[in-house]
Picture: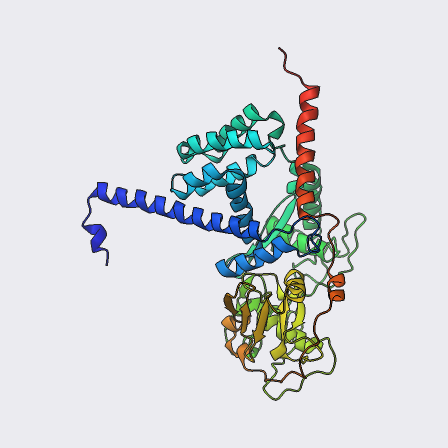
Length: 476
């Protein structure tokens, strides 16, 4: 299988690696330059009707790029933005990139660190210097790359050095799937908030008696869940009828829980103990069958059958689907059905593929769309725009404004195949009425255009640099 490589000596193998890396860099460069040209071609001109739309021309172009590449709109927008930098701002550097001389990580840092340079003459000089030097920077660390790029920027345009962002803006909490039915939580918060939360978790963990079988670390995790339920005490698990911790509270706290609903899909055999097929928690993945049975047996979970529509299931009379139909759509689709989008179906709109009332409120004409892609379909659809066709098994075929075709299938059926059971083929009630100019009035508007937003951010950062320079002049 690998005879071609086995026949090479060490020097030959190293040469193959080096050439492959150049080809890889050049291929990435072609993708980004093509994305940049595509973005430039679809930019909204000043005064355009669509430039203040919530989903404007750049967003519409990103939808096509994302669908073609099979990536999210955010990754598509990043490709387009970097491509615009190469095409419109740093064309000489782009040529070195296309030749395979420069790595993508170098391009990414240059793109970010040179954003504030606006003077065309300065930009041309910077481009020439970057094109000459960037190929020597491929082996530098991220920190060193930032230093050498910033050095060039400050030498040519002192006001264009990127302002260090307030670290408080990095506050975040993310919960991601872990192993063995667990989730992992990562985050960052201010020092004072972190200290307060740390002490609060210690206090909640201490509201049980010494015979509670959990470790302190486990009780701190359970304390975090108690906080999410608006409780500040734990139920002791010592098993004693007269637990000395009964009635313990944390000052100012309450023991009344609040209800939080988490949807989990499981086979009936998993719930009743006759099977061990894992359940599925949207956004997190498989949940062991034993965990599901424990939740049911302890009364922490309420079971409700999922009604799967069949070919003969009649359409519902109104515009909005019933709770039962929404539940089926959520578990069938799991995410927004637009190509490359992974927005949770639970937080999506349910869109009629054939617009209601010509289309029916039934599973074969409904699918999950995040609000962004719902607006895209509504205002960038029709002749010459996005069009979609839905089939009874939930498969959707998209045709982009450029005529490219893309297909998505229900993600839920990857875990539970019977969710793709055909749900009937109801014929539309005639053709939808033609669009009128008044339709565009319903598109949500931005407070200012994308270009104006970018210009304001650049002006703000440059003003901070100018003020700092005025306040701290050089000592000579």
